[in-house]
Length: 160
Image 1 (spheres, one colour):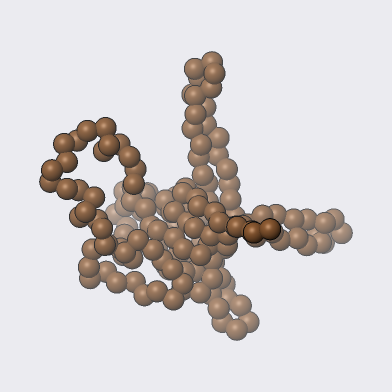
Image 2: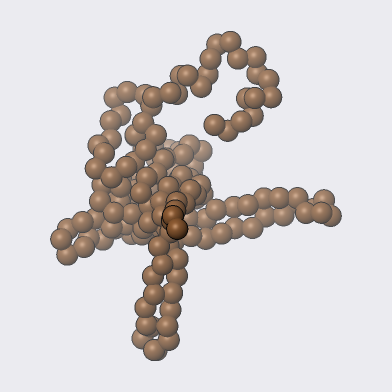
């Protein structure tokens, strides 16, 4: 049987990233992500729920997340779901799922921008492991999304 483990999340950081290092000096960053879901119930009432997700990134990805992101910032992450289990100090068995971040994108419209803080560099759409950040050129495909012949029809509402 084939297996597939891929997670895509877009939300806001619930706390500042916490950077640490493994014994062999690999960067590790832990952070929380709040993902909102909005819908209208059968009674016509608008509802909202928030899912809080623990995330962890390694290497260059961890360093970039720690350097440029703070609580409240919007972030898109791609990763895989991992399962951690341990025995607590009181002897109880504990477990949790966590997303191990493999790739990410900075998102606009964040609190840092409103507060006048420095914006993260444009990484060309990703913050993959081992990739350097190049701020000297715009992200590929940005100009292609805004063609001069667009008429502003319903297709403009598509978020991609």
